[in-house]
Length: 116
Picture 1 (cartoon, helix red, strand yellow):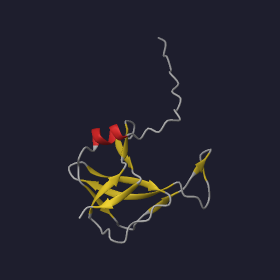
Picture 2 (cartoon, helix red, strand yellow; picture 1 turned 90 degrees about the vertical axis):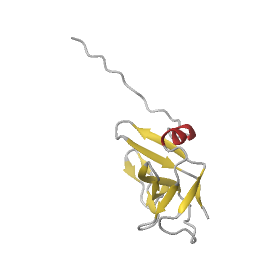
Picture 3 (cartoon, rainbow, N blue to C red; picture 1 turned 180 degrees about the vertical axis):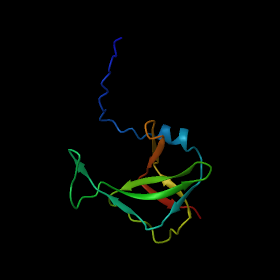
Picture 4 (cartoon, rainbow, N blue to C red; picture 1 turned 180 degrees about the horizontal axis):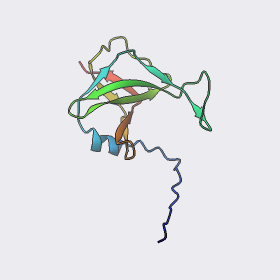
């Protein structure tokens, strides 16, 4: 018996797409879960953390009928003072990625806007 191993190379293209967002999240209303607020996520190089660096900010978010996930926002993003815990928000330029291995949906956006 012969086992054929296929080596998959990572693409430099961003796996987060607008299409994936519409497929997995759709029109679900988003609510911010402020908790401890924004969490900075560091940059990595060759598998090692670059000290005192911020790649992006993370915030928990709940999508009605879908569930909770982590929202990735730009490194310089500041949470508007008017946004409170569980407020409904609109994501600005949302994109999503589905990890088959982890069976999770990750979401990125350029920002959030409070829905009044």
